[in-house]
Image (cartoon, rainbow, N blue to C red; front, side):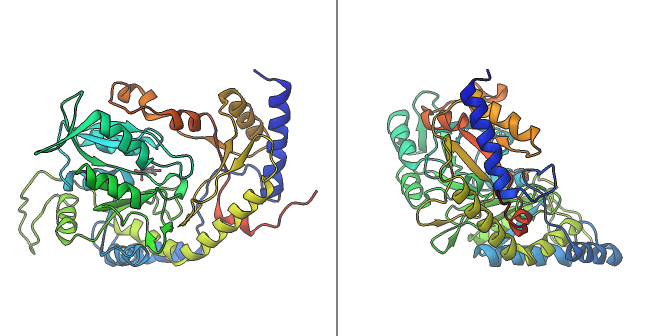
Amino acid sequence: MLTMASVESSHEFVGLIEKVVGAAARPVVLHEPSLGAEEQRYVVECITSGWVSSAGKFVEEFEARIAECTGARHAVVVSSGTAALHAALLTVGVKPGDEVLVPALTFVASANAIAHCGAIPHFVDSANDTLGLCPDALASHLRVAAEVTSEGLRNRATGRHIAAVVPMHTFGHPVAMERLLAVASDYKIVVVEDAAESLGSFIGDRHTGTFGVAGTLSFNGNKIVTTGGGGAIVTNDDALADNLRQLTTTAKRPHRWEFFHDQVAYNYRMPNLNAALGCAQFDKLPEMLEQKRQLAGRYLETFAHCRVGQCMREPIGARSNYWLNALILAFPDRALRDSMLNASYNAGFHCRPVWELMHRLPMFMDAPRAPLPVAERLADSIINLPSSPILAALPVAHG
Ligand SMILES: *Cc1c(COP(=O)(O)O)cnc(C)c1O
């Protein structure tokens, strides 16, 4: 319903976005990749060399670049972020019929990867200061809902084994990982980080994705670094990295001409063509991170006195990549949110609500879940703002 208040708020909202990105050509999309001459050169080199598929120098180079950037000992590149998470979960030992803890507030890929293992997502609540999994809410939930047995953690209600927890660093803002690691250790569960959105985000000097046993990245077209489509798993565990390489490349035993495979495995390898694009993108990652920081600063300043809400700021002690900027309404209000989204689209700004919560999707409705008061409020409060790095390079609008 269009009330006077929602019309005024929508008008104010559009005016503030205009102040931040006003000089940009319409429509201003949510996030567009920064592609240029470098990308073209690398991809052309790939084509000229004939090495476009699953072998070639760019795959190894890209893996080295990811390892260097994250500080992880190993990086294994794959065909998507979903594939990365699927392979990581299988490799850490998630079995069919297990449950895996995951925030209800996430992109569907986090929960899909769990389901691809034949496991069941078990949804948990988020924290207001990170928008990611809340370790304290998790601990309170597990205290009541689960028990540690000789075979690991067991869900008291379903009787199923709870094998792992998958925190996700929402919009690039790091989860409180130190606290989460403590809870995971108390309850004997493995941590696999969905760091799809947080390339370039750190807690102290440690990159997101390197706190758990494994962490996964995505290079989909809307992420900070894109390979068209792609993903990676980072880990410090040598054996895990070996297993991941096997599982994602049809488990073929290395040999010059023999075809011997020792398990049913996946063809998840990233093609050289995509890795070439990734290498070119990594050359400009520091610059893109700087631009995103500037843009976030501009949003925070411009929206400081906004009446309906505040922009999300990086958590204390963390450095966020500010992948997607977000306005958080002071009071959850889906109707207001939607009228603001409509007004922004009409003005040529492609803002976006946050994902529908996982337990409200038909395939996950019956999955076990903790109380989700924070996620439910956030779902009606978040509006993502245009966040392409290029927007920072434009002059600020006046007036
Ligand atoms: C992008 C993303 C993924 C992976 O998506 P792909 O399209 O498979 O690369 C996983 N989890 C989250 C939270 C994401 O945002």
